[in-house]
Image: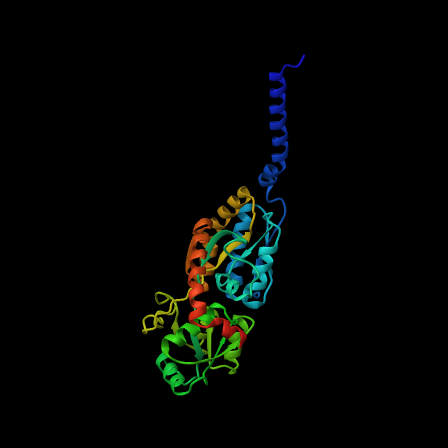
Amino acid sequence: MQTPRNGRRQFVLGALGAAAITATPARLLAQNWPDKPITFICPWPAGGTADQSMRALCTVAGRVLGQSIAVENKVGASGMIGAKALASAKPDGYTVGQIPISVTRFSQLGTLQADPRKDFTYIARTSGQTFGIAVPAASPFKTLKDFVDFAKANTGKVTYAHAGVGGATHVGMEEFAMAAGIQLNHVPYKGGAEALQGVLGGHVDALADSSSWAPHVEAGKLRLLATWGEQRTTRFKDTPTLKELGYNVVVDAPNGIGAPKGLDPAVLAKLRDAFRQAVASPEFKAVADKLDAPVLYLDGPDYEKYVNTVYQKETVLIDKLKLRELMKS
């Protein structure tokens, strides 16, 4: 005969058993992950500086995880096509990707239909970029002062190439122009590689880009007028920064790794550990040094806080530079 107490005990044990059965598949998924290759979405063209650094990271992180990480380039809209694809992917750990810090700007400008404060899982901040202003070797601009003086005397006649409207190279150059009191004519390209060719081909007066210009500066085809970091680079120690020259503009646009929102915590922990090791690896350091990309590692939670801080700063910058109007022009 079943007593009320025994009945309650069987009910509780039954409920606990059902809960355990329900929870087991999720636990097993995390324990067995990854059991197939992982896709990494890079929102920039193959061969560019961001693509090179991400491939180096994926090689090491894949080795740590015991599965290959295949890089898939989804380009366009200044990196936002790839960012949207990442935000929209299934949060199972098999799709990760680069999150450009410009998501904080483009989400507010309407180019990215996602909210970086809510729609991503942050894994790691990896490295920054060395931006600079370069001109052809035959250019009459020997220094940044020459560039500024001519632009002041010839309003809107100086052209510069950049990797896309609203991106770091465009916004950074417009910040500089505002600080210098000049008006420039910007020429957008689909990426840094195409912008570089526009300058090398003589179609544009100057290039605003990350270090795609570096080998051409060393080869004597381009002249580097200024870099945009806090300090001079080791590789181009004779080139001053914008800040040194009296313009309070610093741009390093750190790259980061993320996944869709809703990732299993156990899977996230594995990804954080894998990319932490990848950033610290000699392989990545070698590529970062080659690209003049300063390592700026932050673990996922700190990276997420950084993104939220930048989002607030971008809100102010969008109004200051009238970026909504520029996007429409």
